[in-house]
Length: 223
Ligand SMILES: Nc1ncnc2c1ncn2[C@@H]1O[C@H](COP(=O)(O)OP(=O)(O)OP(=O)(O)O)[C@@H](O)[C@H]1O
Ligand SMILES: [Mg+2]
Image (cartoon, rainbow, N blue to C red; front, side):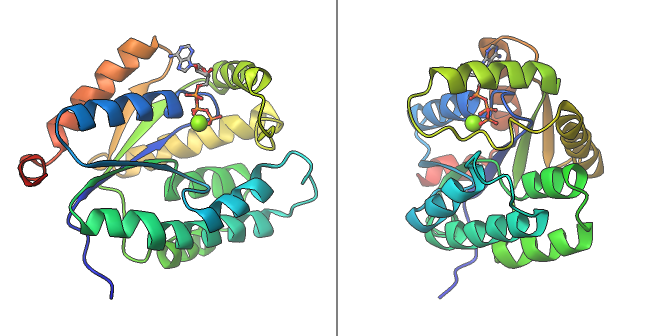
């Protein structure tokens, strides 16, 4: 039985290497220390079935993947993730923090790859099953800076090289950035756009004040 969400859903978006994973972890720690019930998750992935789809999506060997295949794999992973993780945590009244969500599909597959926007919106609607972010933190960053940061992280990582998107041309990432900015302009109440060029501490402070200004007080008391 589907239960209407009562928690608070925060998503983190931005180009490769802008600092999403660094910052979402810091926010999760802060919220947990402040007494919120916080669930930290990510896309693509976030649950066992979607993690298997993630491996296909990010594998640099899969150069032959068509944009439509990519779009549908993202939607499939999202449908499972919403069902298994996000909707249940929101129904329990928790705060859910998700590293990338449906805006990434619009930025990458529509603005980046040029797929039809109405197809993407339709698939997002079906995959999200009524769940939608209450707040989206967009870490806005020059893709050249983000890619430099992401490459040093990938070089230092001993796990699978999840770099299919990092290997795209800079022009692709510039279209993605422009897409994110246009989404933020079209929904200023939902988006908080944070300058990603600063230090980790500066960005964390800006995110903290954006979140604490908006998160419902009653939610804290309920946890
Ligand atoms: N403000 C910052 N200044 C300098 N380095 C940073 C900053 N934020 C993050 N980093 C470093 O840059 C690298 C990329 O950061 P992070 O993994 O958080 O980015 P991301 O947006 O999650 O990237 P991806 O899109 O690839 O998942 C990491 O090595 C991280 O330690
Ligand atoms: Mg990341």
